Picture (tube, rainbow, N blue to C red):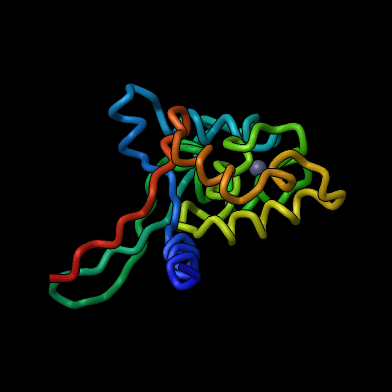
Length: 164
Ligand SMILES: [Zn+2]
């Protein structure tokens, strides 16, 4: 009996969660818009600004790498910007935010790298020094159920590809 309980704990620690961008397509939602809405006010003010981006191009014959410039719009790929800027600013996650919103933002702050719930909770704790936030007080099992039942953020279990 005790062994079973231990197995269950180990199994749950291995479950990782991520934001499934395909879920947004399937539900006619724009993942880009939804991430842009989580940007800090400074970044939101810059949305759509034209930017020049340098990117490397290798010459097939000589193998030499040169740089070409292409024009992009600021925030057209919002997740890297959120990770390097907005998620590092105060107020990115606030105590009164619903638990799913807070979990969603933690995943954005980590560039949507699949994360076990324990790591998500560790990072949430940093946003709640008083430890009185609802998502800190929520027991881990309850939080797991809330995430598993999510119908509005595209949160999913990350399935490891089968190695056959
Ligand atoms: Zn920002």
